[in-house]
Amino acid sequence: MSAVLRVRDLRVHLESRRSRFELAVDSLDLVSGEVLAVLGANGAGKTTLLRALAGLVPVDAGRIERTAAGPVTLVFQRPIAFSGTVAHNVRVALIGARLPRGERDARVAEALGRFGIATLAERSATRLSGGELRRLALARAFALRPSVLLLDEPFDDLDAAAQRSLGLDLRRAIEQTDAAVGVVTHDLRQAVSLADRIAVLAAGRLLQVGRTADVLAAPVDAVAARTVGMRNLVPGTLRGGAVVVDGDHRVHVHTGLPDGSAVWLGLRPEHVKLDVGRGTTAPIGKGVVRRIASDGVLTQVTLEWAGHELETHLLSGRGLARTLRAGDGVVLSVAADDAHVMPRDEG
Amino acid sequence: MTELTPALLLAITGRTLLVSFCALVAAVGIGVPVGIWLGARTFRGRSGVIAIVNSGMGAPPVVVGLGVALLLWRTGPLGTLEMMYTPQAMVLGQILIALPLVVGITLAAVAALDESWDLQVRTLGVPGLSRIWLLLREIRQGLLAAVIAALGGILSEVGAVMMVGGNIAGETRVLTTAIMMRTRMGDFEAAIGLAAVLLGLMFVLAAVLTVVQQGGRR
Image 1 (cartoon, one colour):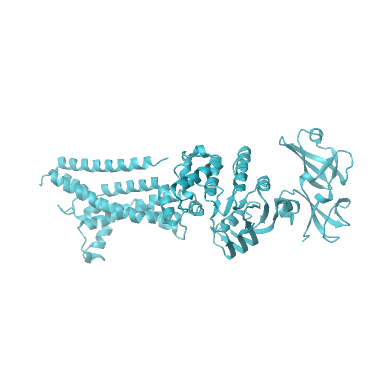
Image 2: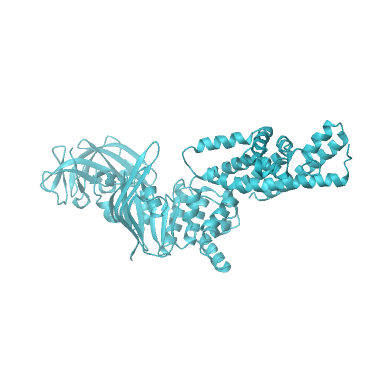
């Protein structure tokens, strides 16, 4: 698959009376048939990046090259509904395509069907619910058959069930096109389930781009780590193939960084294993349970280990999740392959 | 005193409609694009321009009439056009009365749209002319309100048309100036007849526009 949108040395300055913001992206490609999720905290510049890619904000330097002929379209975080029917709203997107009436109507019907709103075709678009409007906006964008499809927080303000069902429809729709898709979201789960690649943005800078699994396992720094859900970040020093934390706690790691380096030890919650009172293959020492909270599916356990808080997950209603109490002592273990090391600036 | 014959009434009504129609078309033709531009753009001094438009919406017609009279007076800057006491002068006065209403209501309708409206339409690849059509369609409730307000202002206005038209029989006499004159002369019967025609006109035109406006609500 080839890059249909190439960003090189992009600089965008936004200035208002109250604030100043700079977006700097040195290199980013959107590839046909692939989904790129852009992750970042509020104010990281995700929406500005999408708007720049869509040609909606002036670029101060660098270039955005398009190599495909099809349209580039962006679905906004708060999509608008034109007065008129739902079908009219999709037809609007096809005005520029100048299709014969029959073909146009077929495309409208196909797009509405794809997002499960065919029965709403003759309903007034301004009276749709938030979830229905989101589906309409996606149907409108897909009807255009874009070469680049950009989605700004497509799941924002939807409840969990609506998010799941829209996520399924969106995935199916994406699979049926060869558009390059760029999706901005703060929802890590949706990003992981949709994306082939992840880009991490922080304070207007692109920190990292890579295959989803690679970025999740090996974020480049602590900011990227927090953004991709590596919630346990512990400062330590590298000595003899292990990160030494708080003097006497050692966690074995695989890293190319030199001995004596100040590092962050990054552990995804699912990689911190618990075993009450019993040793495991790669023990890292004892911890004490501080808090336990369950959402019915996962039980989140917060522990104190080596003077730091660590988070881990257990499946609710099974094994340890049923018996563990705050104050319990547990032995923690981490596999060396799951422990990620990032350089730490001591300044 | 000339009797108000049906032929005379018809002539006055016809002239009223013609003058008002010309003024309305010009005010809408100028005011809608200006209102859209003001509603959609941000620039330094925009608030000041909008404040002028808003105060213009309540400008006393006699003051507008005075301004037009000063312009068109023989010694005024446009005196050589010899437009004073002509229907054209009345149209000019009425345009100036209706224009702030059209601009003000149109810009409010545009400003009420989502901030990103234009960007979202552009990202759907809708070409330029179709974008304008879509925008007009979207704000049509506001546009019709602007037309109704402008029509009301124009049809009921008497101060300016009296000053710059002069109420000359057969030339610049319209329903409002004729009502004023007949009342001054004590011919209440004719004044009431003229007033009934004016009210009837206003009602019919407003009703038609309202039906159009409400029909468009979906």
